[in-house]
Each structure stands twice: as structure tokens, then as C-alpha cells.
Image 1 (spheres, one colour):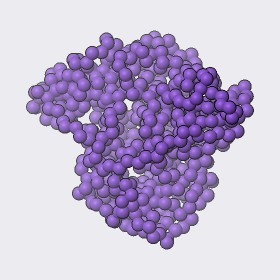
Image 2 (tube, rainbow, N blue to C red):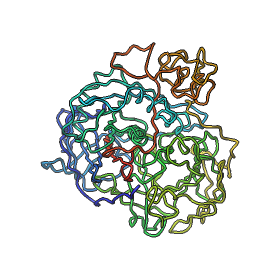
Image 3 (cartoon, helix red, strand yellow):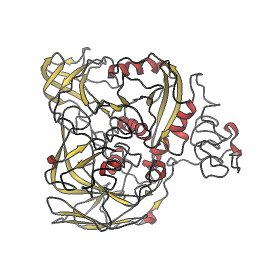
Length: 616
């Protein structure tokens, strides 16, 4: 993909007045209107942010103060401070000067900062509560470019479905359950502001039977007024938001990334410095918003990097080790369920900053304090499920700030290129970003070196040298770590099976290439007989005659499990889909336009095969 084009350092986000609450968040004192006036001269409400990139690589970030009524007053910042408490939905007091386009902010104060929490559980530990998805097909009068069955396969029953992506990436901890709804009819969009998409969602939501935690609004025909391929409301890991929109786009990256924004994730970026992997003065370096080709929060349908997974709470115990002194460490495959080390977090000798201009809107300055080291191997989505070429065993380095608690606002992790002179080709020069066997990365200020002493399919040996380091390494749960750590024997194969679930065997289906045991619904879906849940006979999951290469069938979805609900769930005729878990991970489908992530905070991306800032 082509390199990102660096954006202008500063420009003011001009925000159209947005009516109606995009997200179901509301708090603070209010008299209604577009912001509650307080007797100290401030306005009080919730922070909402909208971030967009259009197909011409131009973008803007829109900030607003949301009143409990749902009305929003635009906020104009010259440079946006990255306070760890400035999270989506946080309550603010804001002082500023009214202008025709919004309130130009002179100062603000967080009223109710988040309470920091941390969790610790190994891969064999507890599951995170399932998330329920409604995938709503919208017909604007020209039909829908996919069927309900295809949508269900993309979301759930394909081997590389979105459900399977999240299960693999979270080591079985995060499952999703989906129903496909519709098509429902609506009038085509002539304009595509966040107010328009919000209004569309609020108009159609009553047509969706049942209640869901996430609504995926799928445009059956591309709307030219919308310059993006995907749009998402962005929350935090502890408080996900609910809405995403898809402009007739079904690629892996857009279908994984937009819910990722709901879960609070920012984009996975890259950093390129003149003539070196990293410069001592990183303000000389260029950040590419979607520059990580090994991450769906960037532009590749692979596993998310360690910062992103750590923020979601998918690691625990000694899966991650904080390193502050010299030592040798055994790094285990990133894709497996292990009780040993799967990433290292190493404090940099000095704190650095980078000016991030990608993603639209005012420039933000981000802190780079830690290196993150992980071993990738060609398993599941780092293998063939991610599309394209399977990854060879490789060690990747990222730089970012410390992993924050799930209640905090996420930041951008940046991949570092170990072969900085390669700037073109696949991944815009980052496809060969790995730390090669025997190669040493040295911090440009000195005092720290990281060497890939050995790399294989089963483990990597990483040698860390820190000048003057005396504090011993610790695990994510703050317990002392004794290096080099557990070996491959501490790992088990990762599967698209939720932690704690027991595969359900259908009443028939002991064999047969055509999944003879799963005639319509004989296996019992998770929520409907024979539905598209993970456990139907011959269906999309692990029923006999279903999951490939299970007994009786190669089949996803297999003869035993239609991707529709055929019994056991009372839904209106508009419903066309099962109540299982959808995940789509087909790589790099070409899609028109860009992606927009609407932030409370809403983040926006653009999509397209040939442009690095436009992953699909």
C-alpha cells in the first residue's frame, strides 16, 4: 500500500450542529439545550468527538459538548490535550468564547474522572461477557448487495468470520452473538453528516426486534454522499458504545475495526524517522495513522498488537512482563493460549513525543515511553485466515505510552521499522519491519538494546540490556518474574471456542462429507435450533459434522446449520439471521471511500486496497 500522506499540522475542526444523542450516554447537571450553564460561567456536559477521513485523504476531528437532551454544542480546540481522563463520555466543565461555528475553548476541567481498575487472569481464566450484535441490512431503494446468509457467514459462520477473529485474538475470552435483520427500507442519504447517520440509526432502531449492545448498520448500496467505508462510535474498553455504519463494505479490516472502535481502540499506526528505525528526537518523525500492516486497527487482518490487547484485558498474569533491568526472556507465540510470556514491555531510557497529524483534525502530541516486543507466527489470522501471505515467525517492536486501564482513553501504538531504508512495496515498507534473528535494536539515546537472539515457530529468545537497571521484572499482576520464563509447554492451541464452553454434539452427524448429522437444526444452536450459533450440528461452530475438519464435514456452515434462525426464536419476518456470533475476516477487500469512526470519541478511517490510510 502507498505511504500515508502527512497532514497539515494544525487546523480547526469546524463542526456542524449535531442534533440528537448519538450514544446512549448522559450525565451532569442540565437545564437542557446545547450545554448546561453553571454559575461559575462554564458549560457542563459530556465530551463527544467525531473523527473522519474522506476519500481525498483529508480529515477533520469534531468535538462537541453533549447535553442530557442529546443536543450538542461544537467545541473548537487549536491543539487537543491528551489527558488520560479526557475519555469518551467524560463529564466536562468548559470555558470559552462563543463563535458562529462553536465555542472556542480557553480552558476545561474534568468533572468526573474515571476510576482506574486492572484485571489479571491467565489465558485459561474467565471469559468476558458476550457482546450481542444486530447486523441490519438497509435497502435505500436499489437493493442490498449481500444476502442475509452471506452477511451471517461474514459475521459468524465463515472460518475467518468476525466472531472467530475476536475469539482468536482474545484467546477465547471475547465472544460475540449476532442476528442479521432486514432488509429494512430507508430513504437514501443526500448528505452524510454525523447528524444524518445518527438520525438514520435512531429511525431504524425501533424496527429491530429485541435489544442489542451493538448495532451494525449496513448500507445495501454505497451512498455517494458518505466518503467513508465505515463509521463507528468510539467508547472505552470498560464502557463500549453501540453504533457502527458500513457503506456497502464487508472487508475484514472494516468489519473488525469499527467494533474495535466501539470497544475503545484507536488506530494502530507506524512511525518513520529519517534514515533510522527511530530518532532521538521523534518530533522529526512522521506518524502514519493506519500504518501498521499487521493489525486490523491499522491496515491488515492480523492479530492486534500487544498494546491493543492489553488495553482490552485479554492478557493476564505473566502473559506480559515489565522489564526494567537486563535479562534474557523466552517469548512465546502470540497466537496461542499460553501461561508464559507473550509480550515484553520495556521502559525507554527517555520519554519522547510525536506530533500525530494523521486521522484528521487538530494535531495531537503523544508520549512514547515504552517498547513492546512480541513474537508473531503463522497461526490462525496471522496465518491463512488473515488473507494474503502467512507471516513467517518474526519479532515485532512497537512504541507507545504505558497501557492504560480499561476506563481510560486509548492511545495509538506505533510499529517501528527495523529496515527503515525500505519505504515502498507491501505495507508501504513495513512488511519487513521485524527484528531479524541476531539483529539488535538500540535506543537512539543509548542505555537500552533489544536483541532477537533466536526466533522459531515455538519461541523466541530476547536479550535485553539496560544500563544501570536494578529493578527486577514484574508480571502484569505485579508479581515478580523469574526469567527466562516458561517454555512452549505452557501453551495450548488457540481455537475459535469461547473459554468455558463445552462443544455441543448434534443428535446425529457422526460422519459424512456432507455433514449428514446436521439436517436442518439437528444440532441445536446456541440460541436457536440449527441456527448460526457456534454450536449447531454441521453449523458454523463445533457441532458434529460442522467445524472443519470435524467428523462429518468440511463445512462452514455445513448442512446441519442454516445461517438463519429456523426454530426456537420468536422474531419478526424482517429477521434474516441466526443468533450466534459473527466475525468477518476476509482480507483486504477493495472498498470505496473511507472509514469514519464517530467518537464519543468517534474515529474515522478510509478504506481501499491501494491506499495505506484506507484499509478495508
